[in-house]
Length: 188
Image (cartoon, rainbow, N blue to C red; front, side, top):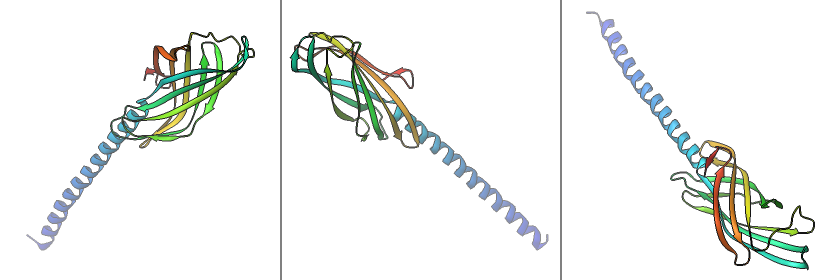
């Protein structure tokens, strides 16, 4: 046995160890990346919208030419368990049955896992100029929130729709129609 055979054998053995370590590193990185990406997608798709309170206040004028202000409190929830979700300046469009109330661009924010952001929306409507007269006692309010949401390495424009029926005499919720995620075509 020559001295060169030992060097070749040692090099061959070290090459196998280096290859195994490299293979483990590549597989581990791929698995970690897949898991992190999955957690990011799950965090963005777990966002929901809830109407918490709604009040209608009459300003001036008499029926049917009167001004009304609608104040609606909403919560944007994250049902995610691991990653925070960043919401970038969402736009909310509100309709009262078939009457458009208006739209608002809201401040962005970060929603921690299992927590929510609160927004107070304010819409002023002159009922004589609106498409239809808004009934006094009860009617439905539909909100559509659209915004870019980021979690981890995933980012997507998401549209959420939430509908509720309110009794405007008592400012009580009659029926919560629930939330629907238009982007992913699933309930929130």
